[in-house]
Length: 133
Length: 133
DNA sequence: GTCATTGCAAACGCTTTGCATCTGT
DNA sequence: ACAGATGCAAAGCGTTTGCAATGAC
Image (cartoon, rainbow over all chains, first blue to last red; front, side, top):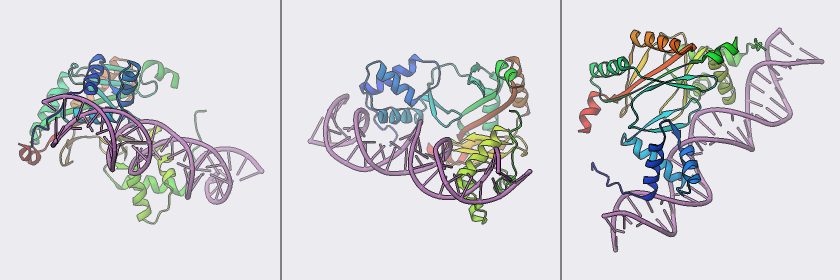
């Protein structure tokens, strides 16, 4: 009931490898495209199914882009958050130990366990901000 | 080029009113349903178009649910964040002055302006956490 | 009258699913 | 052999768009 007996397959390995090769968030479609480009034939549905399963198992991180696309990243990457430009999409990675502590505390205060969090700061980067006014 | 001369219409008014009536995030479809239920006939496309325009003008807040649906909220609501249970969906509103300050500072440090942010803490609430083990 | 706005329905793009086939154990 | 995994193509679903009709100024 607890261990759904996950089977190792060529496809899953390719998927894990592709994720491990990139530090950033990738969409399912991008991952599928990269695998195809690399000669690894993996069905799109398989990519979706595996990413979903891995995310459910907390093996990878998921997040949604502004236009609703799901993007994934290997969990092993050092934990950080993003500062993203609303206009050009440029992103800066930022770490915030204080936030991590705050999230853990606030969740604990309310009896929540197995906690995770998402922080995203959006704005206009210098070039875009200047161009707009 | 700067003032897109927005025209007041019955539909837009109904939309604004509906948003003002609710403190929480609503999806475009939910808003459309509420308007219909209230006897206000507004096309779904119009709802989408207006929400999009209002969000672009920063008159309302947008955020994406875990399944990619866009949800909107009147901006006037006091700013707060959510602590949400992954299993049952229960949410607790939390405020975090420290986070607000941190977001503003980190963005400023990188030259970003017109800053906004999203913070979401997810976990398992007490009942769900207990049920799972 | 002019031009923004609306409504409807068709089009879109990401994601999910049904089902026959294949593969790891 | 059996149960889980895959591939393909079709279906779903929220969202967007084309275009003619409508409404604001």
